[in-house]
Amino acid sequence: MTGHLALVGAGPGDPDLITVRGLRHIARADVLVFDRLGTEALVPLAPSTCERIDVGKEPGRHGMVQEEITRLLIDRASAGHHVVRLKGGDPFVFGRGGEEALAAAAAGVTVEVVPGVSSALAAPAAAGIPVTHREISRCVTIASGHDDPGTSAAAERWASIARVPGTLVLLMAMRHLDRIVEALISGGRPVDEPAAVVHWAGTPRERVVRGRLDRIAAMARDEGVGNPSVVVIGPVAALGPEIAAGMARSAQPA
Image 1: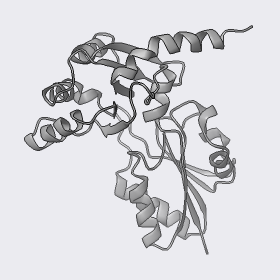
Image 2: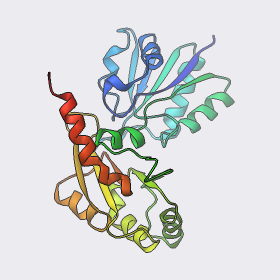
Image 3: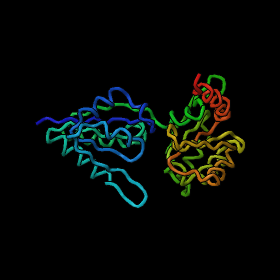
């Protein structure tokens, strides 16, 4: 029997932001393997006969480890099923989709990758922040906040990132944000550089905290803003309030 694996990006949380191709895969899935963040509203769109497997992690409950998830995908696809691995954001942007795709290909399973809207781009946009702007920022760097600057090697990596011009977008950074900010400032980022934390972007729970780089971690903590959040650092963050005000006006009924 010949199975098939589709790695589908669910987008940043708003179900309207999934691609048409992604919806088509969900609609004909035999097995749907999904994470906790950004996928909940899409799971009910799978067929009633579909096997639905929640592998996400949440406080008080640990999901499967990555090796177990990969084996599950290969086993179900090898049995002849159309398996959809539904991931928040984009499968290939800190989603471990590359690991799953390599393992499936090595096992002889046909793989299709369906890109999704990454929160690295969607969260800033939801807050009115363009990650690039012709007159302000001509490049953007996306980094994982799991890299704790507590070690000298990691601190040097953050110092190197600090020296890259343009916009810096951090994913999964709230746990280490204080130390990351210190490392970035030590590496040369201005203390008064505009920054923003976008929490639960694109959902009814969305909140945005804006401030100077040297204060943004404390401000987010004081506001009770934690994960899931995206941190944006750079001059473009200063454009956010003005653009967001225009976005709010456009959302008002005529």
